[in-house]
Length: 181
Image 1 (tube, one colour):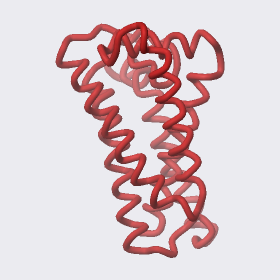
Image 2 (cartoon, rainbow, N blue to C red; image 1 turned 180 degrees about the vertical axis):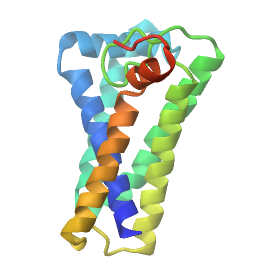
Image 3 (cartoon, one colour; image 1 turned 45 degrees about the vertical axis):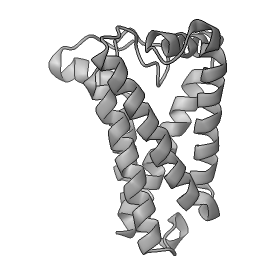
C-alpha cells in the first residue's frame, strides 16, 4: 500500500507540474488557456484571464502542498477538490456541446470530450486514494520506501503521467481520433 500512496502523490504532482508549466511557459499557452475558459462556458471573456490566473495559482498551491511531506494530506484533499471541480466543469462543457479544447496541458485543437472528463475524474480518485492511504498509514512518504519500492512507485507514476498528459495524442494514435496538437 505504501507504493500505491507514493505513486498517487507522484502522479498528482507530475500532472500538476506539467499542467502549470504548459500554461505559463509562453504567453500563447496562457492566452489559449484563458480563451478556453470562455470557450468551455466557465465565464465571460472579461473574467477569463483572472480565472486563468486563479486556476494556475490553485494548481501551484496544491502542487506545493502535495510535494511537501507535512502538507501532503492537505494537498491531496485540495487536489480532490481541484480535480473534482475540473471534472464537473469539463462534464458540463461536453454536455453543452462545447467545441473548445480544455488546454489543460497547453494549446490544443482537440475539442473537450468525455475522455478529458474521465482524466480529471481519475485524478480526483487517485488524489482521494492517496489521501485515504496517508490517513491509514501516516508514516508513508517517499523516504519511507526501500529503493526498489521507490522505483516501482516512480515507474507507475511515470506511466500514469505520460498517459494522462498525452491522452489526446494516445487516443489519436490508438483510435485515429483528432490529433491534439
